[in-house]
Image (cartoon, rainbow, N blue to C red; front, side, top):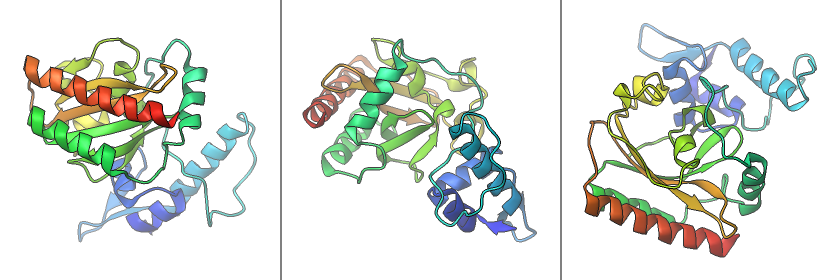
Length: 239
């Protein structure tokens, strides 16, 4: 059996991300009498093998010979999510941006901090969505840096022109069963504005979240939109 830290090393993700998967049940685990989570090596290897098989077009390749330095993987999403009309072009733009797994940058961290100040929300994120992950270029108020793509409220934001406001996720059929709502994160409110590159492709969002239901006032929403415009302009200079 493995500790959370050991499982994270094998999976190639952060410990905080692995903890989120364990708590949500995406990766089977149990608690010791001392309250520490444990996961079986076989479950981690099975996940690695499933991801390797998926990359090979669904052909079973047999057990992995080595897991010393695996590529980052994520559990499968809990269900279907909306996709932009030209998702292949969008994914190509995400890859070309070089944002995924890039270092934190002050310019984006300032924007998320300002977003928490103008909306009084405890959580703010700049997200980027690739095929399998929702990755955070900047984050305030959470200690994990990514989620599976299927958990992302931002999936719904990037397919519409106007900001996405979810006043109470528990009462919204799109999100009521989402692990970010039902799990330890306890998300109830989401407000997100799409971020686009220089070619107009939606890469992700600037979003604010709260653990209580709420509604943004007009001036708060306007401020969030202005910050998102600044973030998009910064992205456009890089792409």
